Each structure stands twice: as C-alpha cells, then as structure tokens.
Amino acid sequence: MAEIMEIPEARAFILHWGEMGSEWGVNRSVAQIHALLYLSDRPRHAEDICDKLGLARSNVSNGLKELQSYQIVRRVHVEGDRRDHFVAESDLWDMLMKITAERKRREIDPTIQLLGELSESLAKREHVPEHLRERVGRMHEFIGNLAGWYADVRRLPKSTLVTLMKLGSRVARLLPDGKTKT
Image (tube, rainbow, N blue to C red; front, side, top):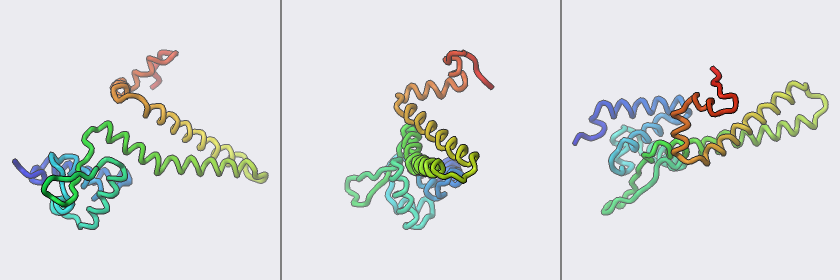
C-alpha cells in the first residue's frame, strides 16, 4: 500500500488544508499536521509527522499541542513503542463542534465580556456621544444573542443538526409565516 504522502490527492489535500488554515487564522503547519493525521489510517508519532511534512520537531510539537487544545487530536499509545502517537478526530460533526466550542471560548466569550464592560462604562459617562453608547450596546446584544443561539443549537442531537443543514433555507417553511425570504 502506498504511503500517504506518495498519493498526489492526499498531498494536495494536506497542502490545501494548510492554506485554508491560514485563511481561518490557524498556522499553516498546524493545519497540515491536522490534515495528515485526519487522512492517516494509523496513529503517527512526532518524528514521522516531521518526516512526512518536512517540518522542524519544535514546530510539530507546538502544532500537536495546539491541536490537542482544540480536542481534535489526541495522544494514544502504541503497544511496543514508547513514543507518543497521535490520531485526529475523524467524525466531522464532532470535529466541527469541538473547533466551534474552542473558538467561541477563545474569541467570542472575551468579546462579550469586554463589550459588556464597555457598555456599562459608557452608560455611566455623561459626555459621550449617544451613537457610541448605542452602537457598543447593540454589538454587545447582537453577539450575546448569537452566543445564546449557539448554546441552544449545540444541545441539539447530531441527527437534528444534519437535518437542519440539509434543509437549508427551506427550514423557514416551518416558521409561522411559512415563507422563505431571499
């Protein structure tokens, strides 16, 4: 059987995933490590990842720590080998939910906190333009509502989420006015 990096489509996927990672604010090599592990049919140790991707050991070590913090890569032990091996989450929905939860924790939650503090501070100040209070307050409310919606949706069973995704805009037919807005 061909090694994964010898398969042109696998190499293309790994390279593209790295490029997309950069677009999503994730280090390119971290995304490539994830792609390699996702496509792998067996656990891989850090030296193997270094060899396959041509990355420095420190880069792979830091990348694995980052992916583990997202809970989309986990460390496993292989019998007869003292080195740590790693596998990626292969369930796409679970991967999406873990990435979303971690990004919310890192990006959205601190933003809601800060906007709340700013809104509170602006409300106490006398000589502040009203539009400033109003816009910061609206942003705080909007992102707070978005986070609340996310929390509600996150509790839905995977099968319900898949059905909602497949429905797309047709889900609007289930709403009281029964119309889809385009």
